[in-house]
Image (cartoon, rainbow, N blue to C red):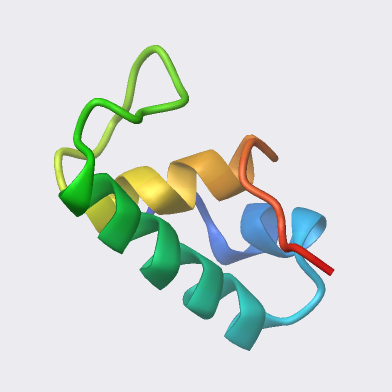
Length: 64
């Protein structure tokens, strides 16, 4: 089972396409700057999983 679930991710972002785009951008940022983590603890070791966890916790938001 995936963590966080798609249901949790869509609570904070309206579109699933926007979730994916936001996660990809944040994952690239985490790869370029590994010390820029937001959460204290992550379940995932990969940057994409870490980005999804940050989105689920509503720590990463879309710029309007």
